[in-house]
Image 1: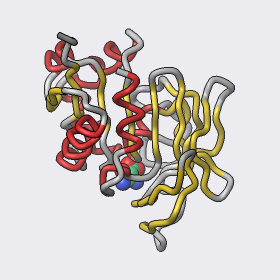
Image 2: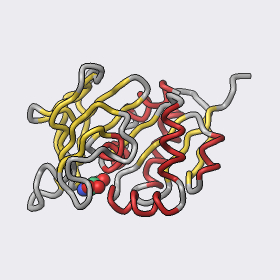
Image 3: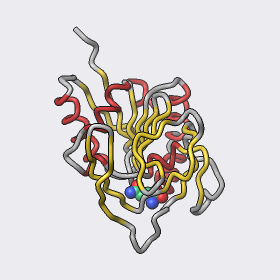
Length: 199
Ligand code: GLN
């Protein structure tokens, strides 16, 4: 019998349940059995094969994570080359270069493993949130952007999988993927399926 993969969802803060639902649906579409685990303390990471970092508020996540040892534990996990999927705030945390934001300007994200330069709240406050049709290989994808960051530039090892207005919004670097929008808020599981294929 094939070994059942366990997917962790970083449970510090943010849209956790929506990712759990999307992962279950994606796995069903792929005929794959997975287990889910909310990651709230460092030892939770021992049991998982891949980690989802949800959207929410990156500054709040850093604050909470620095108090309970989760930041160091996740860095440890990613250093082993394990797969991760960051959405929105999660993409900020994974970025090597973060522009704008209290205590974050010109700094690395909390988990700086992706060679991306990212601008927090890049679409401005007055248009905090919008949804748009994105062009993805194999068809359209509904992109829901909520106080989303803009990926300004990517390094040579980063593959751009979807672009919007000339900027990358879905990127991949080895076993790491990130979106600046929220696929977990749609019924479309294709991006979660990309992640499950990595684990
Ligand atoms: N603007 C948020 C931040 O900087 C991200 C928003 C989101 O994840 N929807 O962390």
